[in-house]
Image 1: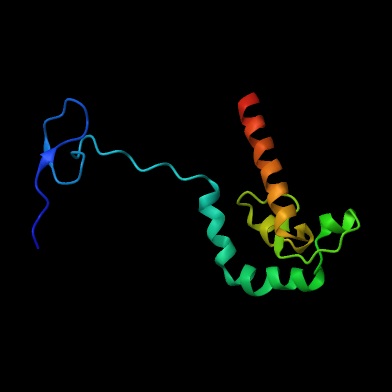
Image 2 (image 1 turned 30 degrees about the horizontal axis):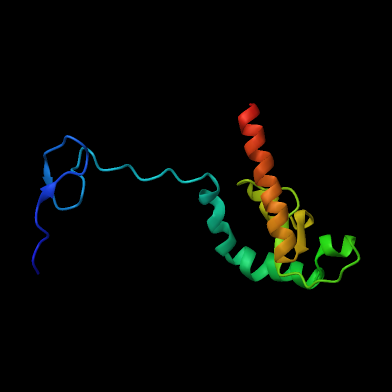
Length: 123
C-alpha cells in the first residue's frame, strides 16, 4: 500500500515534513479526561449491572421525583441520591440509590453539574 505524501507541518512557521498533519514537536496533546472518567467504568461492573441496578428498579419501579408530584412514571434510571464522585462505599450503598425516569434524572444531573461549576468559579 502506498504511503501518504510528505507535507509541511500544519503549525504556523514550521517547515518539517510529515505524513500526519503535525510534526512530532507540534502534535497536539490529547485532551485531559474528566475525573469522572476514572470511575465511569464502575457502571459496567457486575456489582452494578447484575445486582444494584436491577434490585433497585424492582424495589422501586416508579420515579421518585414524579411520585412527589402525584405522577406515576415508570423508572428507567438508578441514581445516586448523593453523588459518589469516585467513593466506592457510597457507590455501592443501597440506601444512597433512588429510581428515576430519564427526564428527572437528566434534570437532577444538570442541576448538580451547574452547582459544581458555580462552586469551582467561587473557590
